[in-house]
Image (cartoon, rainbow over all chains, first blue to last red; front, side, top):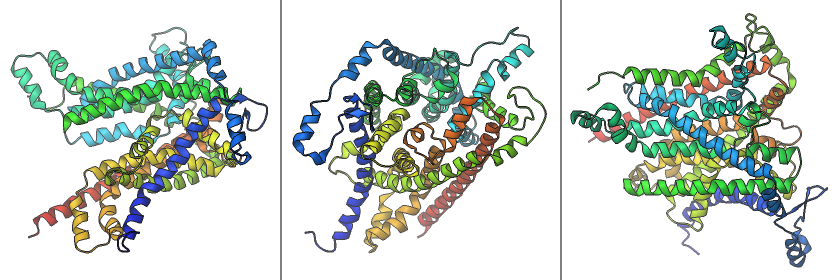
Length: 306
Length: 273
């Protein structure tokens, strides 16, 4: 037993760790173990719609018996059906291309913000964050009105005489790209701005004093120094974009294959819970790789800074 | 060198912000459109706002969303602050790596996976789905955002202030409420605001974890949008945008004032003999 005077201190201290720890174990880790387990189960016409269900009250023998019923059948099915492989690949492709476009658009914005007068900068940052606070669903929804055949974009383009007949943009992959680029732009601009803003401007002056032309200064000085922001922004856009559901569902068409949408359909339309679980497990494995790379990069960055 | 921003910078920032705000502005304007078609302007009207106010399903959903948001943001803020304190203040404890992993992982987790896994948990333990399951799900993912925001504030915290209080005989519990909490309060408020908006915004996780009688506003909007675009949704969206914008501006003004006052107090303390 600890000395009575120290007792309350220890108690409150361990409580600080225990409360969030137990919550996350119960509602974050435990659910994944259940997903993993169900991904190894079979579909059943019952409630819950999968077999076996573990019944710990039946004793340890029965528990071990039911473990034997688990199988990798769902994973074998995923590998054999090209729909799933295509979904994963096209999710990765859409996420990669969008990340690249977001970088191309976001960089000049972040650069302009970082070079703006000091007094404006907090307001500009605030303006980038503000759309975050309006519903994501509503912002995606707004694009339906812009991109549809009789939408504002087509009306505008035919009014200025650029097109004769309306373009089909909504319900294609192009609309999905537009939606992702739009929705994730702030995720790219903010880390880029943070990296560019703290850059020492005297470095640029030094480069130009030494006769370096502006575009070369950019490639030799500015861009390498902003690399941590570029990497952080790309991961912040790429990782959630891979699992995106709302954007492909509202803006995309039947040709749009994204794994988040496939998982949703598998779960809600086909009601195949075990298969949906194995789709989720594979998606997690795909995402773990870039996350681990990202963490390593960040750690190395921190070590360099200290 | 340069005195002001270059033309290129002004143009790129202006175009970028136009891209970010144009859809929102158009949506607000078209919420006042008299016609049913979302792209054809038929004159000003507030009839969609009247329709919205008479739509009982929509109002019920808004009420559910508000309750879930207030409750889950508050619980998430308490737990998230504890998690941040645990990460910054408690050097080593058993399972620290796992703990910090669990705090950061939900930030990058696709929503479909979080939603699916929580639903399967609730089914496995036979927990009735509805208001409480959505609230638990929202607490879980938003506590991580709160933890990150509060943590960034704690890292820059001057611990000598706490030590001084303890040296003067203030018990740890009281030290936390008298010294620590007021200093990290702006981050806690920001964390709460973030948790609240994340909860209001969430469609995917709520869809997985909800049950009868707990349809949230995003779920209502989503099902309405799938049936076809109606200007009524524009009206609802405009109301939401107005509330959130107003809330964010108020909150940022409050935090700014607090920051100024805190700095003033610190300067006075430093200048004191």
